[in-house]
Length: 110
Length: 114
Image (cartoon, rainbow over all chains, first blue to last red; front, side):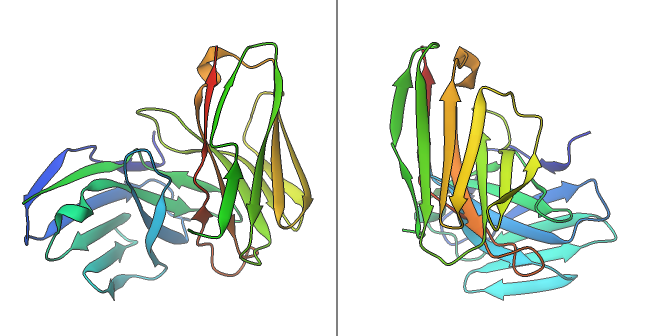
């Protein structure tokens, strides 16, 4: 069983639309949750972190966490072509043990 | 720039060579990590150091040998690698455990084993 699962996509949305990216995780003891953006040929870049149930907003990005359902999502409002990238979900269990999903490829169509 | 640098950016080595990857962080963090990223696979955590002490070794073959002389520098020594070890090797850093676990990644070293 994979620790972190994401739909690999590709997900295509028109410019200006809302992109919704989803992630599920298997370990109920997971404590911290992160979204990273990775452009082709580049390293992952931290976008959002979320630690408690509910929504967390930062500009056009909103992270949502539901620990009961073991589900974390990322919403991107007013999607731009520059948002086209692979989005990685990461989960921290205890200490320094991190698990990443395989990523969801997002394409924003102008 | 995230404050984490890695050298070299690209490396081609034969199976009998010995090489080292270097990582340096300028963020004042106390934890450093090595990850392996292969195509179509999730990032794999290889090693973790907290305050220079290794705390995680996720069943990594002994042909990969980490070294952390201080909280700002991390090395990955490579010897007798296999072609399947070709991948992007990423270094990351974060604050000490118990605080924020936000990790910041370096640009990576693209390794090709021939």
